[in-house]
Amino acid sequence: MAKPKLKIMLVNPPNCGRSIPEEEYGITSLKQLFKGEPFSLQVLAGPLREHDVLIFDMKCESEEAFWAAFNQFRPDVVGLTAVTCEANTVIRLAENVKEKSDATVVIGGNHATYNPEYFNRPPFDYIVIGLGKKSFAQLIGKLAEGKKSNGIAGIAKTTPGKPLTYLMRNYDETDLMPEIPPRYDLIAKYRDQYFLEQLGLRMGFVLSAYGCTHKCSFCAIPNMAGGKYLNYEADAVVRDIVLLGDTSFIRLVDANTFGNARHSQKLCDKIIRAGIVKKYFADVRADTIVKHPELIKNWKDAGLYAVIVGFEDVSDERLTSYNKKYQGQVISQAIEILHKLGIVIIGDFIASPRDEEDDFKKLENFILKHQIEVPVISVLTPLPGTQLYKTMKKDIIIDDLDYYTFTNAVTATKMPAKVFYQTYAGLMKRLHEKPHRPQ
Ligand code: B12
Ligand code: SF4
Picture 1 (spheres, rainbow, N blue to C red):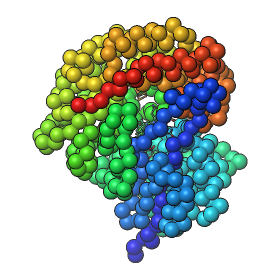
Picture 2: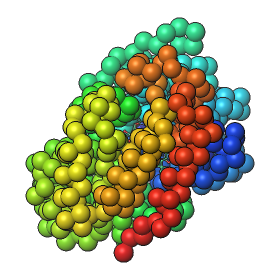
Picture 3: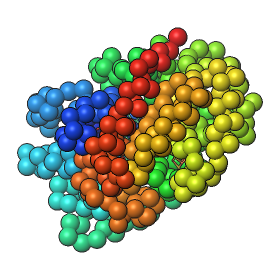
Picture 4: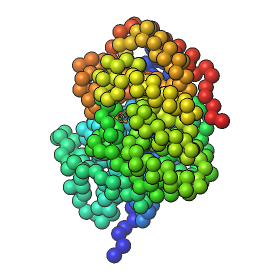
């Protein structure tokens, strides 16, 4: 007998998060609006073909439009995704969903993985921890059969008022379900809106790996695959790139793209052999670039246009405290290799609330000296669930997660707060006066 079909609404929350510099000091330049396809939801929708799935992107549409779509679709299941600064917004949304319907509400994503207890509240029924493509499909299978869904590893049934208990999932490559592509078709109506203002371009998202080989103290990635680094099959990556049709820029959304050099070389060969001509953006560690310059060169030939490198800091002491596992000299070597190859550098740096004007000056000098084309500077933020959170918990002065946007100091600043934000905003303004534009 065929299983009943469920109506599943997957929701990307609106751009949210609050800004201290704006609220307190009228500095509006630090708050940014981000838009990019809700790739996690397209991935989750992949294995649910036998059901009726709707992806609603509140970063593209109003809340009013959301409720109109909700009332028309009348979902059996609502799936919400959230990073930390979106956590409070999705709680409010889930409460409204429960007031208006008896839909089963499921939450997943970075915050649900790093701080599942935060969502152990009445409006949620299930919390999906980490990589959810396969576990969510298993949950939907059980719900469609009207069966109890306790016991799926990686999924917690909420127990408000009592601590959560759930089976840890031992993630492996089968959790990536490479045989099933993301449902790019479900967001087709939004695609024109996924415009990256900072670079002035549109890009499509493709996955080639998941999790990370490392465990930097501030980072909310390693637990997403239970501390593992998983590769998505090379043929599946090529298939997904092709599915994006004439999109000329592809962002490999992996947190660490060339973490397995052999696999990356195989993928590179397959892309070249398939005759695909696209430009790629990928997140790469500085030490990978230094260890495997040939691989990076080969990828340049395959279309690697820009790399996002988490340089984080210019001080060896800070790099060690972040558990980055390399020192400043590796950063300089990596930059040299990238410049020689003509690969654009999107450099991520972290400004600590303890920084003083001199530290900002040093960072600016470093960025200018090394000609980092697109510098991105975030404020050090102890995200709940990370190692950094454990170390900095006692110093946190703002625990409202709305402020965990990476542009607020949630621990005390050493300089007067106003001067800290003015210095930070001033640096960002100078660095972005002549924005990089892809050729
Ligand atoms: C693409 C991306 C974006 C895009 C699109 C995201 C979107 N949903 O609209 C844009 C540009 C909009 C964006 C914005 C921001 N982002 Co962002 N983003 C990413 C990035 C690079 C890739 C995410 C991705 O697609 N991964 C691949 C998919 C397949 O994996 P996944 O998202 O983890 O999804 C799986 C599981 O999490 C789970 N899952 C996820 N959601 C759900 C929902 C349900 C119902 C279920 C069952 C399961 C489930 O199953 C999925 C499939 O297996 C990640 C870093 C990374 N490499 O992961 C950062 C990342 C998620 N972003 C981050 C941040 C901080 C932000 C911003 C605050 C901006 C900033 N300063 O960087 C804003 C937030 C927006 C806002 N202000 O409201 C942080 C989150 C850390 C945290 N815990 O808060 C990350 C981890 C990067 C980092 N530097 O640490 N982001
Ligand atoms: S910062 Fe980068 S290298 Fe470090 S754990 Fe996160 S994804 Fe991995």
